[in-house]
Length: 102
Image (cartoon, rainbow, N blue to C red; front, side, top):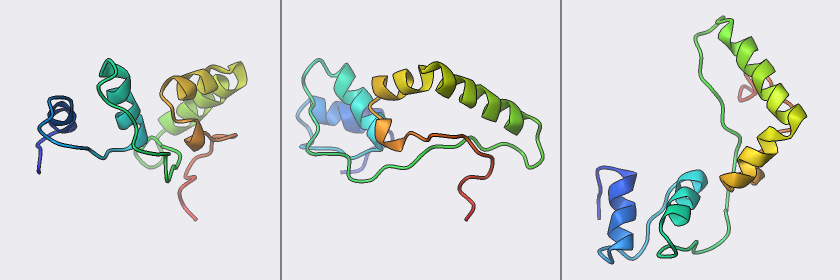
């Protein structure tokens, strides 16, 4: 089955019009959390990776975002947010600029 949005796919499962759905783990766990017990995970997270924020090359916003994320890590807020959204497996220890570039 093809759906135009993740919400439509989630609703189809909740309404019994589809047997399952697949999505990124934060999306999946948010849907589970909002479903009032109508959805459950079919297994463990099988792959996870940190997220990043794209900004224009050379933008001073990159440094501001790095400092803001470091503050969240230092205060423990980052871990609280990650735990709330079930994405602890994708957490990082230290923010970097261009971390995805090898």
